[in-house]
Length: 76
Image (cartoon, rainbow, N blue to C red; front, side):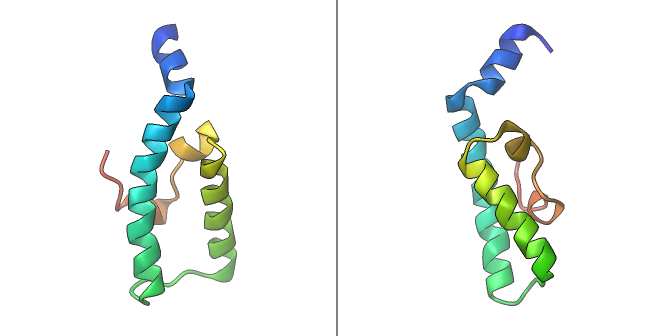
């Protein structure tokens, strides 16, 4: 990957745009869990909450590594 692309991907604005896309998928997942269409263990619930909070803090690793439960609702 070129240095220009790497720098662009590390910029706060790029991360915010990617986070917005990821959070759309998370909202779908969250609603499905809330309605009882999907189940999650308490341990997994805590892991996903930690991931969500890391995304709120613009953690590049978290934004790029979406939990598998959320990924299926993520339109790349």
